[in-house]
Structure formats: C-alpha cells, structure tokens
Length: 79
Image (cartoon, rainbow, N blue to C red; front, side, top):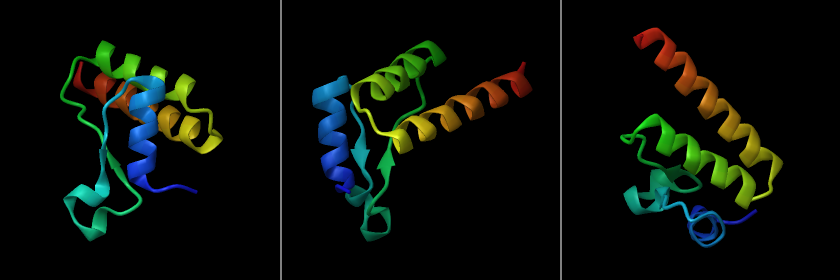
C-alpha cells in the first residue's frame, strides 16, 4: 500500500487527474486525498472515470462508485 502522495502522483501521470495528498493539510490528513468538487458535474464524472480506468485497484473503483452515488443522490435532492 502506497502513500497518498504516491497515489496522487500516479493519478496525475496515469489518469491526468490532479489531486492533493492529505499530508499537505497536516498530519491528520495522512493516507487521505483531496479533490475539488467545485466543478461542473460532467467534469467531475470525467475525472472519476479517468481515475477508475487509469488506476486499476478494486478499492479505488469501489470508492469512486460510492462518490458517484453520493453525487447523484445529492443532485437529485437539489432538483
């Protein structure tokens, strides 16, 4: 298992998605990543799809599916 820094470097090189390692925000952020979701839904979906396709790890795919589900649930509640 790699660090969050290794993951975000791989996300950028493999999937062309920029993330921030949690360590950048203090010791409590170790083993976490940060992603801006203040973008249009289409752009966020594209980034998540790239991550899912670019980094083939089951746990990452499950995380992305959970995030997508939350986005659609929240979006439905706002409409």
